[in-house]
Image (tube, rainbow, N blue to C red; front, side, top):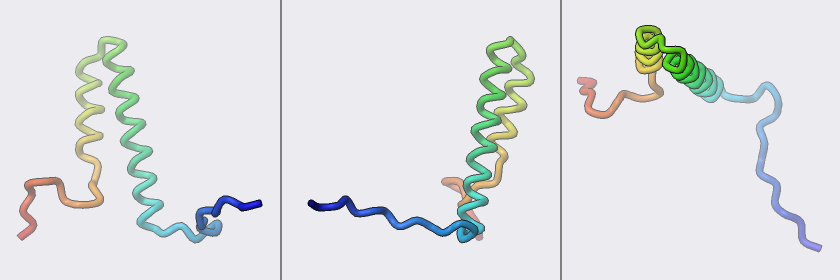
Length: 70
């Protein structure tokens, strides 16, 4: 009987700071996108634009395409 290989896991407390930060950022962006959608559903276009702007201004893991760093 063959067993399926198990993917390696990271022990509790060993998640890298970069992984944790990326996870937090992704969660915040999803929340802001939800808020934007709900605002649009309720007819609050101004509030929806603010939520979309906040999501767009979240810091990126890397520089956006087309940005010159030097």
